[in-house]
Amino acid sequence: MSLFAFAGALESGLLFSLVALGVFLSFRVLDFPDLTVDGSFPLGAAVAAAALASGVDPFLATGLAIVAGWGAGLVTALLNVRFGIMNLLSGILTMVALFSINLRIMGGPNVPLYNVDTVFDVAQSWFNFGLWTNTVLIAIVAFAAKFLVDWFLKTELGLALRASGENPAMAEAQGIAVGRMALVGMAISNGLVALAGALFAQLQGVADVSMGIGTIVTGLAALIIGEAILGRRMVFVATLGCIVGALVYRLFIALSLSAGFIGIQPQDLNLVTAIVVAIAVVLSKGRAQRNRRRAGMTPRRAPAAKRAG
Amino acid sequence: MLSLNNIHVTFNAGTPTEVRALSDINLKIADGEFVTVIGSNGAGKSTLLSVVVGTVKPERGSVHLDGEDVTAWSPHRRAMHVGRVFQEPRLGTCSSLSIEENLALAAARGKSRGLKGALGTRQNRKWLADQVAKLEIGLEDRMTQPVGTLSGGQRQAISLLMATLLPMKILVLDEHTAALDPGAAAKVLALSTEIAETRKLTTLMVTHSMRDALAVGHRTIMMDSGRIVLDFTEEERAKLTVQDLSSLFGRAIGKQLDDDKMMLA
Ligand SMILES: Nc1ncnc2c1ncn2[C@@H]1O[C@H](COP(=O)(O)OP(=O)(O)OP(=O)(O)O)[C@@H](O)[C@H]1O
Ligand SMILES: [Mg+2]
Image (cartoon, rainbow over all chains, first blue to last red):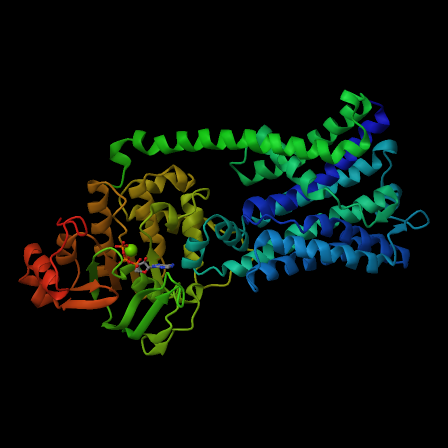
């Protein structure tokens, strides 16, 4: 693999760790299998590109993309919480609607960004690491997002959100408005995904309406690979796993592409991703079952004096 | 004063699986009164408690708390005044959160939850540990351990503490010792009565043990087919044995009790 391809893999790995963080919040913390992601990723790209094309400051444009992502997450959560539509279907409905909305925002299937300054151009004027400038900027954003999520999940609101996802009956009994927590969590989750989309478009120099396809599966792959490597016991480990998983996954893809590994071509990527996710889910299921069996034994082995009885 | 007025609850109304879970329930419980609730499976005991905590909305009737109509209040709003311990120890706590994080959730009940650190200051954490120490089960040294690593009895003790951590009025216990071994059950029951007494909580406790029903609290009600069929005051109860209670119950519902339906404990 060339150095150039390696740098590219790192860039997109770090970038997709933002998606993985979003997917971690929805799938793991909230226990809400959210498919909005395939729409909110290109939404972020579309909003940022449209704003950039009309002369908005690149950081403001990226910020607008995040706000749009919040909106998308809110819509999905509202469909589920307020109107009782099944969570999977809520996400699919928003995702489908976003396809049209993204076309409207961009005024066409794509918006090129060759003649405008992006956040990466601005970063170039701050620090210059040559080939690695973009990687450094995305790494800063990815780790900042990780630490923000870590911090948030330790706040009163964040803890309430975790409780709502893990044990809604208990959360309700402790005075937590479980539905409202879903709104908050889904907004944050899709905000992260939209941020990834906005950066991706600026990195590629184009926003395209079809660039969201497979985002959810990539995010899940990163999440699951991270969990397989680091485990998911503590929040800060799980969020680190999102970054590690996304990097490993992207490097693996880059490697198999460059090696012409069993003839894998770029168009096969979604198939490969789907297979990787399916295998990883099956493997982690087996492990979770073994853990549960082991956990089930512990109370019986606990010393009698320490028990409530 | 907690009062339930003409409460009717029907599940799956208008379908072949329609169940009348509660019909015309009228119940007034004075402040600080501890009521034990018995009755056969499916009698409507859990449904009655769910109406009190607000997770089941009655189709008719009203729930009043100190004169205020709380029928339309959501469960999380009622949680300000009503604490609940579930039958299943896993339901009352969050396994992946530590003991102190679970308690911090309870400590924020009724307050708006913002972006402050959930565990708060060092004094705050000390206060939480002090509350756990009062349970006298040695958990105050394990505050940072995930609750998922505790035994059922320990989890139930923590649930009880969470339900009653802040000033509140009504404590609702639904067979909260049923999933525990006898030793742990006795300990958790003793803790419950102690907390209810010292805090003067209005308490509703469902139990399948007639002996516990008579021994604990101030008043015993018996339910069958969605109705309250017997209601004993403290004086009336004092004269009753477990045998008396089961034969009275048999007469009240017009049939002998199946031993497999109600354990004579
Ligand atoms: N969510 C529900 N949907 C439909 N039917 C329900 C529901 N909850 C309870 N029921 C029915 O209502 C009736 C009363 O149930 P409830 O759980 O209140 O009984 P219980 O007295 O608590 O019984 P047990 O001693 O078995 O816990 C039963 O016939 C039950 O099947
Ligand atoms: Mg019950």
